[in-house]
Image (tube, rainbow, N blue to C red; front, side, top):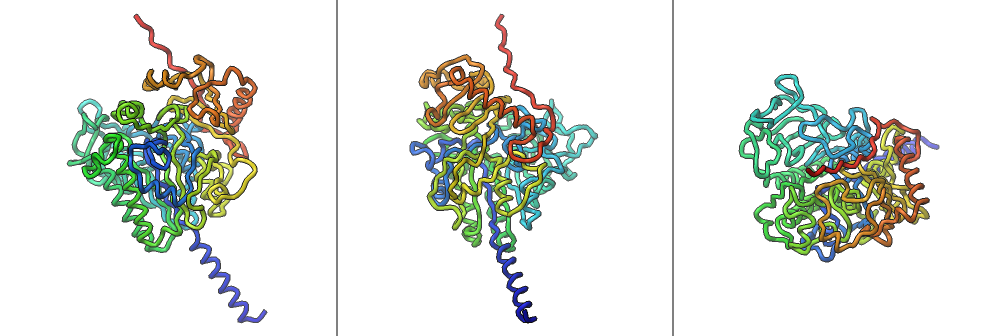
Length: 522
């Protein structure tokens, strides 16, 4: 080969590599908080809430009908999403992290943000974090705030350690949890302003320090503005980017902005969902304006099922009677439950030129699959000690024909520690039948309406193809299937992973579900 041809070959080779890098998609992952399966028009034709932007997104991409959060509450779902590992392998095996709690993601654990950083992506987390961080304190003791009449021992003049910018994100802006102190915005590792006032009462159901003039109604609009600006600014750099937009809505406090009040047929909750839809539309418009939309994989979903009456009024069940709106659709259960309504969630993916417009998939998938899917897009190999429960769903997104499901089985986990395992049409809840050990369970009128049978079994086994509302428990009449699913569940627990690879250690011993003792009556 002549010198000229060698030079041309090298030049064209370099250009080819550069072109391949330019084809790496941007990734925008939008997670709503406590949004129900039945809240969107594209999932529920009888929804009383207008969701035009999400309905349009579904028409432009793929709508999953069997997508799941790995837990029926917030923190464990977010852990699994970012790490590809079920959170019940950590110290958090019940409920969620509390205010001022320490980080749940270990410093050396690979996250999807770190993976994308390694491949040249600019990364940002905007919105709710709820995975713990470390606050400097004035007395060297653990952070507290709002206890008795004390404001807080946190030194807000110091940086916050072990937060999002140490777990794979170049930039962070948001609130740790909208109803947790400190009541302020945090940018990267600093509070914006000093929380010098005490918030308590009303919508501030957890007392604690607050910046002056803090208004809960301003949280979602400010997250929207920040996300739009970040997308537009980052798109100008021509560097691939990853945005994890972790919305605070429609989670409590339900505070729709004035221009959205009365715009739905499902009360203030419906109005807040409508505003959430508007927020997502603003981000999608920013992608379009910046010229990034055609090369961006957009995913929208929710972290778990809808909330019951308590923090949200009216909650999922009361909305049925008051507005004839079913946030859980026809599914059984809600947030915190091991039933489908606790963790089956809307999931929409759009990737122009890659994902067929108007596509629909009945494939069973889970948020924990995100990092393995991103690794497949990057053609990156994940180490054995990372993403232990994550499965690549890229073939499903691309519409490739398959002869077997992408997941062998999927584990669900309730707020109180109930395990469920799903394989094919069947799901086994490995705990006594009942209200998922939750005092805010299904109301009697709904139980009577659905006529669940039989009751008082050691576990629950449902065929979701024949019975998506989980009305008929087959636990007693399918002992071999129950045994098979229990063996697989225990295998996944013991091996520290549910995907092929070397066995790994769980962080702590996995505790079995322990039913709450009934209160004795005098």
